[in-house]
Length: 276
Image (cartoon, rainbow, N blue to C red; front, side, top):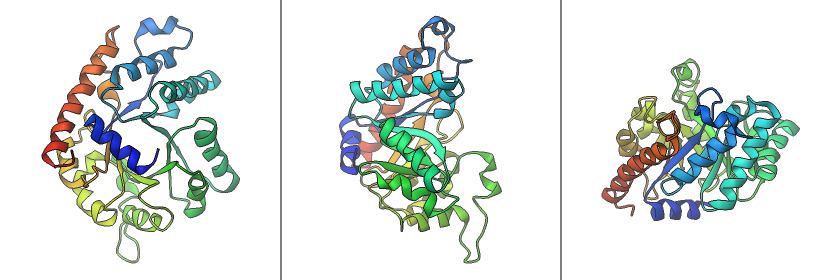
């Protein structure tokens, strides 16, 4: 999916919601545990329920990998299900890979060629040669970790370099020499909304994948106030607040309600901002 197609989906659905698929075997409704593939069944039901309101899904590979090879098969089936039934929805492999040389190239092949995801999250702290293999796939996106929403982000991401810039700022500035806004995004946490003005100074056109809204306390309104662009430029991720809104057999219908609530707010924001 290219930049123009993603923007078109946002305008068509009046939404910039990304639903995070984090299927924890210890949290999914108990009635699913007797199914042949609980993680896939849970993911599939969530997808069908929220597809009218989501422009992206972000399956988190860790939750699938925790179940070994069966979990990875569930991941692959989940991606294939989205691709087959909702081909216009953007698929992000939340894998946070980061290595160099052949290893990085194999990670890229895994998620772009074997799994056919549209994007993968990548840790940039080993530099350009750890990211470049992911940029060799036409039509695919790299999403670099820039400013994350966890408390530990302060341990390194705000370190000041010799030129006076902070580390997260250097990541954003330097990486723009590697790729454009048409195939690179940045992860920027919603709990750091006060930094979005500076982020937009550094990356005025890039999409930002924003976790931390809802369960982690981030404000959708604050993120949009400082982060919106003329093409929207945001993918707001919600995981727990949607997929675990209910732990009962009604989990899918409740997830649908929660996704619709968020989409309704997003529609209003897009309308008042004259993006749609």
